[in-house]
Length: 95
Image (tube, rainbow, N blue to C red):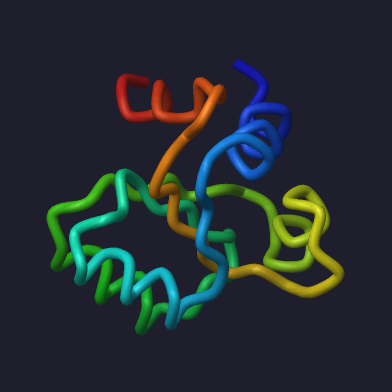
């Protein structure tokens, strides 16, 4: 599985929430199926996620690169996959 291709496909065909605050809301509401964080995601937010029963994929990309990969003109340190759509990104949970 190619992470970048799978992420783009999830963004295009599913429902992906961007940003720490929105991701936190998604996790709290139970809508999040998985969270992806950038390699330089703030430790405070990583600690928050570690206390939750949610799969977190830690990308090696910086927030700048994760934003670029997701097609956004801004940095993205965290995002929530609520619906993977036609993407196979949720298979990361099995790796």
